[in-house]
Structure formats: C-alpha cells, structure tokens
Amino acid sequence: MHMKPVSRAQVHLLPDYSHVIINLGATQKGNRAKAVVLNPNSEGDICTGGTLALEVSVSEGNNTSRAVELPILNDVVNEPFVFPVSDPDKTWLAFRLYRAASLHTGGRDLLGSGVTLLKSLSDCFGTERESLVRERTIPILGKDTLIPVGTVTFTFLIASPMAPLNISTARDTPTFTTSSLQLVGHRGLGQNTANRSHLQLGENTMESFRLAAKQGATYVEFDVQLTRDLVPVLYHDFSLSESGTDIPIHELTAEQIVTQDARKPHRVEHPHTRSRSFTEEDGRRTQEIRDRLKHTVDFRNKGFKPNTRGDCIQDSFATLEDVLTKLPESVGLNVEIKYPRIHEAAEAGVAPLAIEINTFVDRILEKILLHARNTRNIILSSFTPEVCILLAFKQRVYPVMFITNAGKPPVTDLETRASSLQSAVCFAKRWSLAGIVFASETLISCPRLIRYVKESRLVCGSYGLQNNIPENAIVQAAAGIDILIADRVGLISAALREGGYL
Image (cartoon, rainbow, N blue to C red; front, side, top):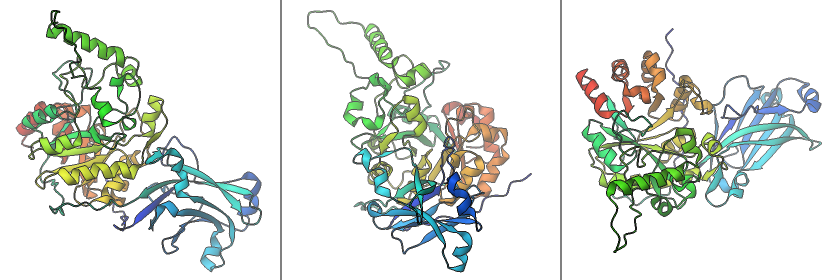
C-alpha cells in the first residue's frame, strides 16, 4: 500500500520573540506519565456533567490560550502549543480544567487550575545549566477547595533568538543543493571501530577530513560539542574517557580536553641516559592510555576508544574553528550538533544536566556564522529534536536535518518524535526542516520509503555501517537517496561512480 506524503501545517515562529513550546505528556517513551491524571477520589464528581477540556495559556502573549478536550485520544507529540513571549524569565504557564461544553457557550465552568513559573523549573542548576529531563508534572487544584484533584504532565522548551552578530558578508540563501547524490565521509574518513580489517585514521580529525575529500567525499560529517567554557570542539562520545573518568565533555574546559591529547609525547629526556626507541616509547604510551581507559564505562562497553594509539592512526583534537578556517572551502561540512542526551547520562552514571540548550546552540552557530565562507556548503543536523527546532528558528542560512535511528535495533533512543519514520517526517514538516537522515537499515529493507520522504518534500539521507557495503549504497542511490553517509569513503565512492551515481 502506498503511503500518502505528509502535508502538515508548519509552525511559524516570530524572529524577534522568544517562544514557549509546550507538549502535553512526555516525549520520552520510557516515561509512562499521562498528560492529565485525575485523582480517583475526585474523578467522579469532576466528570459528572460531561466532557472535560484542558486550557493552556501563558502570562503574556495577547492572552492567547489553547484548549484540548479530554481524554486525549490522538498522538499529540507533533502538535505542540506555541506561545510568543517577550521575557521568558518572567513568564508563567497556566493549566485550567473546564467542562468542555462551557467553553462553547461562554460560561467557562472552571473546575481547577495549576500554575508554574517557567524559570523556576531550571534556575536551581546554576548559571547556563539545565536538566536534560524536560518533563514536568504539577498539581491541578480544585477551584473551591484548593485540594489537588489531579495532575498535568508537560514537556517544555524555551526558544530564544540569537543576539545579532556584526557580520559584514551577507548570507541570505541556503547553500545546500540536492541536484545530485552527496557522499558524506562519516566523522571524516570513517568512525573508529574495533575492526582491524582496514586502516583507520582518528575520527573527527583534520587529517581524516582531508583524506575523505581526496577519496571522493563531497561533505565530511563531524560531531560538535560545547565545553564548560563554551568552546565548540569536535568529539563524538559523551564523556572524555581519555581522562580515566566518565566526566562529560560539557563539564570540562577546552584546555583540560587538550591536555588529554594522547598524541602529545609526554616524555622526559635525561641528558646522560640513552633515549628509548620510538617503538618502545609508543608501546609504553599505548599501555598507559589503556590503563586509564579500562576504568571508564565507555571503554568497558566498547573495548576500545576512538582516536587512540594502538587502535588507529591518532591525531590531535580539533575545534570547530579549526575546521572552518583550515579545511579547504571546497569540502562541504555536515555539522552534527551533539547535545547531551538522557540515555547517555544514564549509561555513564552521571546526573542528567547540561549547558542550557539555547546557549549551546548559539555558541556553535556564532562560530559558524563568523568563520564560514559564502562558498562553503554546510548542513546542520542533530539527533535532538529540540536542537533541530532551535537551529531552524535561529538562522535561515543553512539547511537543518533531523537524524533518527527509527527502525534500527536495539532501541536506546526513547524519543517519541524519532520512534518511527512517519513520526520523524511529521516532526520535520512541522518545524520546516530541510530533511531527515535515517538509519540505513530501514531504507535498505524498503527502498520505496525514500520516495515517501521525498514526496513529502524533504531531503532524504542515511547513515550506518550498512552503508559501507557497496550493494547497499547502490540500492539506495537507485531509489533516489540524496545524502549517503559512509565510513569506507573510497570503496563506496568507487562503487557509486561505476554505477553512474556520482
């Protein structure tokens, strides 16, 4: 059966306002909390007299409110309430429980209400810090008794515009085109793995990017995170295992990260002793690194660490500014913004806290807008739906892609907006994103899904280890894939060229 392409109404955010974005219920599948739960002792009295409705409003925004009838039967994860506000720090959010019929007649039979100040939900974590848990539950108090008659659970995001930048060169048109298939080098010349079947360069490094371009990649993909002192650095994993700890990247300064660079010699030369050979010294350093790594959660799970001696040809850590200023402009950039995620914090056994998400996105965008050349092709992407929303809102220059592993087992990502291909398409259309990058397993098993995505007027891309098999790359190319992210760049480039797709 042919699936109909999605033509969902888009959310239009006002460029000069902050916006409060509210989803009723949880957006994480592991959270079973319903949007509205009535206390058993009061449910009978409240429900007497017909259907109920929940009204949502904020303290400003022309007194605009939104209402939904209860119980909520449809999937509303891609049906958010959006309120423009001038000062989110002073904005409070109100939920009012009414009899639905009274909203239509103008009588407004109020049964109960709950109110929360949005700033108070995150100000206990310190300056420019917030919880990764965005779901909140507040009580609904009875109108007359002020006794809780139920609860409402919601997920919220505050989207604030970027501060204006003093940029002399105008950038007012997107730089990405889908006129032909784009081969993207995953983390450069490929992500590092424990597989020793082929030579591996350190991932997310300058040398890896250069060689990926030489082997046929039109873009290189890399992961950008923000340090504690707000410096965008290239690093994939959640924690800096090189330090021998599970401390997250966002809890370290850029200088602290650089001091863990395993490429540095760390050798002490004594004038009256014979120097060790390179091989002996290199072996000693490799063992030192492994001795540190073995105590970390990440290393225990994987058995190796990317971009370290003994597993690949190691290179120095790089910053986003390094890539923007030192890599040839002919090489396109697929900038994956890796905001910390709840399941990553849980796996590392650390508190689910991170840099405030607007600050995180702003600092990365500022670096790109200040240093990128007009001739440079750039794509912005993220697994985190909130990051995609902010990227599309804060700038209109570079296309934004939502990444999802929908359909790829095992399912570690519990984000409902990425729970299926259809959900991801609905999300991308709702927020005016350019397209979606899927785990390749789904598209390889059913190539016609590529057409479904493109008929929804979205760019379609894929990533994953299956893309390193030439036959799989050809299948997707024949189905019209726009972006193919691969590790074995040379191998896949040759296969696509032979098939006439590059």
